Length: 317
Image (cartoon, rainbow, N blue to C red; front, side, top):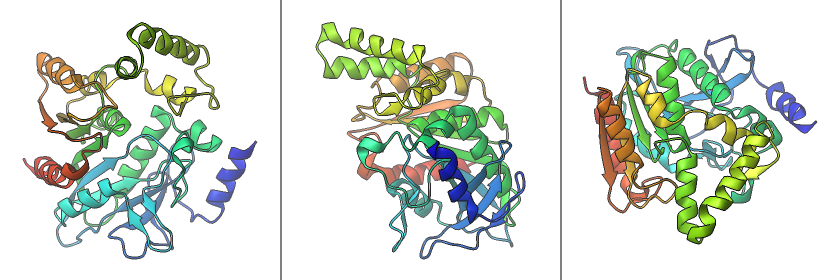
């Protein structure tokens, strides 16, 4: 099989790292305000993570960004490296007031930038990318980053975009010190709700539910299949990520939450934030909601301004 070979080749030049300990990489990204580290998670995988500068004189709080679905690297262009627009704007908003932590997904190699039709990723990625395994990679990076000099990890702010929002909420559920969670375009109920809404926009009324539900039955019949795809993602990913929802994860953790969504986001149902907010409020959770006028899924031109508000909220007492 190809994916174990890819794993072996990817890790062959990697420095040794022990469980949840940070090892500074010999290979750094030129021109970017991040230091590259390695650690090892409980599954024995070497995890790459990146941390914006910390101050040894005054420990800085930790903020963590969890990216959306897909197998694209956090960084682009090997000859002149640059981070994604979301990370660049968030790092600028942090502006030395916190350490920003970002983590490369297992199965993704630095500078990977697949074509749109290859979003599902390599066989290696499709086998690695489940909610449990991705959350463990993030937990390992968080615990390792917490040992870096100048990092204060007693109260952590999490920011998750799209699928990353559900993962961030699950991460907060498992790590109580993560006190604040911001989700952006992350849905609300289990993902089938959004898929049915998307179908209702794209198909004739009589076809929307029948076609989507027929495809979904096939996903449930082959839940561990990494080869079959539905909406560009593997059956394995769909079945394992939809065993929970944003509402369920936020309801089960003690973190404060801020639910953000662009009202021009057609990747999720427009009333998702209302559902999340009402459910959490009814259960006595500390939550708030913000709909960004005209903004797409990643908030587009509004993201830099929203990012500043997110950082301010995460760092407030």
